[in-house]
Length: 151
Image (cartoon, rainbow, N blue to C red):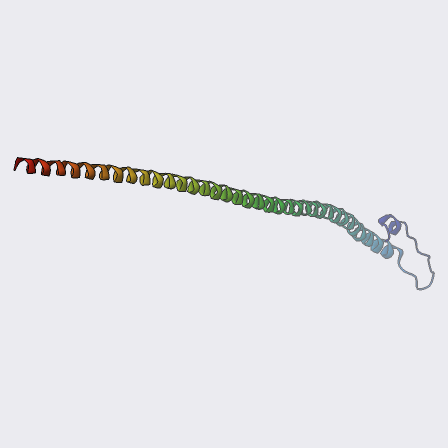
């Protein structure tokens, strides 16, 4: 691409016959130089702006990559927390089941002990009843004999 300085310094050969008017050529070159200089400056500004925008895009791509990595880490952490929570819940359930089973066994032992105590008490009652019955029978026999003797 030509620079404005190259356009400004451009010279043309002169022809004697059917040549161009030097004043018109200089005027046209001056107009061309102004327009081209403006376009040249705008082009540089646009290139700078494009470079700045590309840097911004790179910055945002970097942020996007960072966010994606953070999201992946967060998902991994969430999955890990979820697995740990499930494992802890399973452990709590197992501990509760174990404690419940121990409680059931303890209650069964207590029931068994109470049943044995009940059976012992029942035997003692039966023995007491038999003794009382025997005592009453003997007392009744004594009364009958006393009644026979009185007769």
